[in-house]
Image (cartoon, rainbow over all chains, first blue to last red; front, side, top):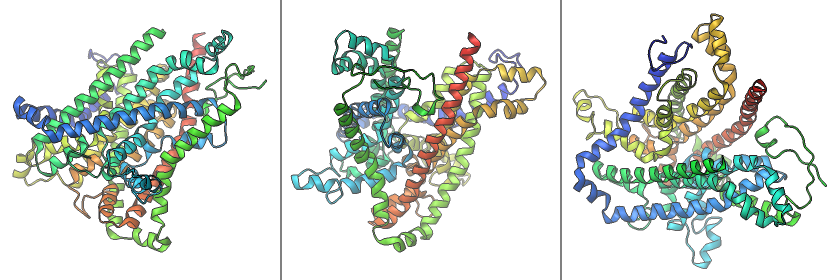
Length: 276
Length: 308
């Protein structure tokens, strides 16, 4: 059993479990995802370029990226605040607030979508507060940003929280001894230590937002060129059986989130090396 | 002067660490006013952004009274969607549990080559938009897909059937169990299992008697998250199901249909079932985190002691 070079263990069942793992991943992950690249190759460079850069597609990328950046920034600020409050302070309901942070992970996106649309439409609980001032939220890009903010919050909180918990208090004490005020200590000492985790959390929030569908489809209004995000455009291409066009946009989206996730990984690794 | 514990010791129910008395003048804490303002803003944000959407689901579901709510829940199409959702999760979750255990065993206990690649592949579905996940299965099984002509020649339909819904659900929920078990089993090492081998235990005996008790909380944690996603998946399932009413519509897809027909009471009644699932999931997750993290902390502590 241990004669094969790929296995270096005396424990039984390794070849069996490895075989199952590789077969499962091949059938369910590698083969399905490889279809995207095969289909792109069939389009040819010209066909791919035309589909990927059509005006409607460009408008969709712009909206998806813009709204996702807004969501990541809002989550960066409020996610950090929530993580800070949950880690540093004791207060009634802390445990419930902590559990509530994961709601966007646990609540099915379709439910989030219909709930947010109801809340932010003109006669909804929140929408009604803004409507008299001429601010429409649902069915505008603003509504899309709201939904993407909802979906991304836990990523930032859960990235920052563990780092904040293990941050040694001594450095804060040292800063205080050297005469720094609390805000100065936060800016100069705590924030730099948190920055890699914060950037990682915001990137995860961004990557999730780029591909999000369920929570956005209801609130966005889906007007081509105005409130149509990239995943929705893929959907409507599919409904017209334009698989090539759908694939081209999918590949652009996958590459975008790959770039974001890889650079976030690099930032984190560099920070870890500097800290070591 | 106040007393406080070591930061982090209380988080996630870690066993209480050494309690240390620290002088907390204002040197490393904020003033009471600043503290209250920060807590207030954070709680207000959580309530408005996360609490209100949850509240509005139940408010809308019960808007026309209990009778209307329960009538909506008894609609045959809704019941069919509910049964389909349970069926899909009932297939996808056990398969991904099996995969998660097998992958974690091979990667951590077998120390196989290419482990980084295997872990990355097992995590990949999380980085793929659900709509793109659905698209890939259409490129495989759809009319214009790889297997499309062959499937048609043999009169087999996969696209727009329950089979496709199950496959897409397996894809999007594939990482959840594996990503909990791999780090957990990595920390536990192989010494206990190797001891069992020298005592003559079989592979199944080792797993059941040695490994399983060590990973049960992590496993359960993964199952809870996997199940929540399996029952709530929308984008991927929406693409591959063809949304054939009363046939391939799971509960989330049925919510969309009801909502688009302006049948809000029914849409939110159906939503309330999934919102309840979310609340139960959050409670289970929170409770399991205590056990799960306590178990991990115990292992780390034991390892530190054995190194000394």
